[in-house]
Amino acid sequence: MLTISKDIKRRDLPDHIQEGLTPFSTVQIKGMIFAYTFLLLDFLIIMPLLFPVIKPILYVTFPLMAMINIWAIALLIRKPEKTEMASLLFIGGLGIIGSFCYFMLILKYSYMLGFASPIYYVIWFMIYAVLIYFFVRQQIKKYSSLEKQSEKKTPAWQYTLVSISVPAGYIVAQYVMSFSQSILLSIMMLVYWVFCIFFIFIMARSFHKYFFIKKNMHVAYFANKELYRKVRGLD
Image (cartoon, rainbow, N blue to C red; front, side, top):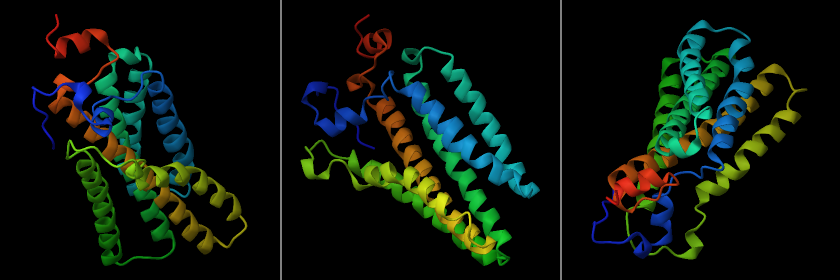
C-alpha cells in the first residue's frame, strides 16, 4: 500500500489519491449504513434464508447478521463526525458479512437444486475467494501511484457494475416468480451473485480507504475538526 511522504502537502496530491484519503461524507454515511444493512442485507435475505430451513446455513449466517446489526445501530445513534473511521471499518465489515451471507444463500439454493458433490462447493468457494482477491487488488492498484490518472479512467468499471447491479437484480426477480422451481432457484442464484459482488466491492473499497488513511493520516481529511487538527499536530 502506498505510503505518502510527509514532505508532500495534500493540495499537491492527484484527485484520486485525495479521494482515497477522504472518509465517506458525514451527510451520507448514516443513510449508507441504514440502506446497506437493513435494506440490502436484512430485508432481502432473511426470508430466503429462513424458508426452507437449512440449519447449518442459519448457524453460520444469523450470528454474523446479528453482530453487524448491533454494530450498525451503535453507529447510527452517534454523531457521524465522531465515527468517520469507525464507519469505514463498519462498511468494510458489512461487505464481508453481506457477501458471505449471500454466498451461503447461493450454496443453499445449489443444495436445493440437488448438487451434492463436495468438488462443486469447493469450486464455488474458490470463485468467491478469487472475486475478493480481484476487487482488493483493483483497489490497491488504483491508489498505488501519485501520478495523475486520465479522466477516461474515472469512474472505474466497477462503479458502473455496482450502480446497475442492485436495480437489475430487483427487476430480474420480478419476472421469475412464475417459473418452475428449478428455473426460479437458478435465476435467483444469479441475482444473489449480483448482491454478493456488490458487497465484495464495498468491502474492498471501504477497507482500502480505512487502511490507506491510517497509513497516511498526515494528509487525510476529516470533517471532525478536532481529529483533523490532532493528526496535523495543530493542537
